[in-house]
Amino acid sequence: MLDTRLGPPYYGGGVSDHANEPDLVTNTLDYVDRLFDLFHDTILRPLYLVGRTLAYAAVILAAACVIVVAVVVGATRLLDSYAFSAHHWLTPLTLGSLLTMIGVLIWRRRRPLPTKKKS
Image 1 (cartoon, rainbow, N blue to C red):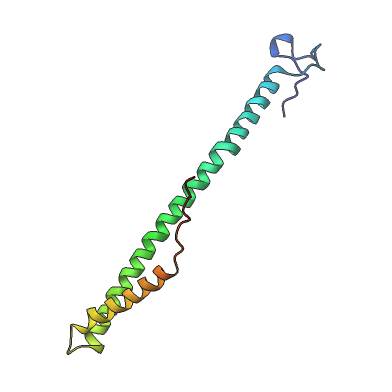
Image 2 (image 1 turned 135 degrees about the horizontal axis):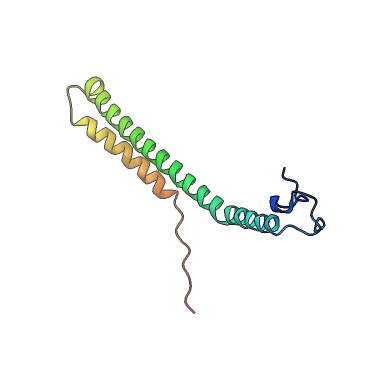
């Protein structure tokens, strides 16, 4: 660490007469450092958190879409090849009925938004 008691080289590097006075450069740099820390903690860190959350949500949503499509395609091929090989119309009917029942169950569990009364 730099010894602040020593003067600049043109003073001969001896002990300064102002050894007890605070150094203007050190105080200014400490102030700037605190200012940048405050900026980082109050603005940048929440932005990083929001950005990271959005990025993870996008990746999870894309993966969920791929998984749902793969499951539906796999179920269609499985039912078409093994279960209803003679009656191809039963595959879309079965999958459509299943997905409709899932949609009805999800719809029944919903809660309507509260209405605001006008006075």
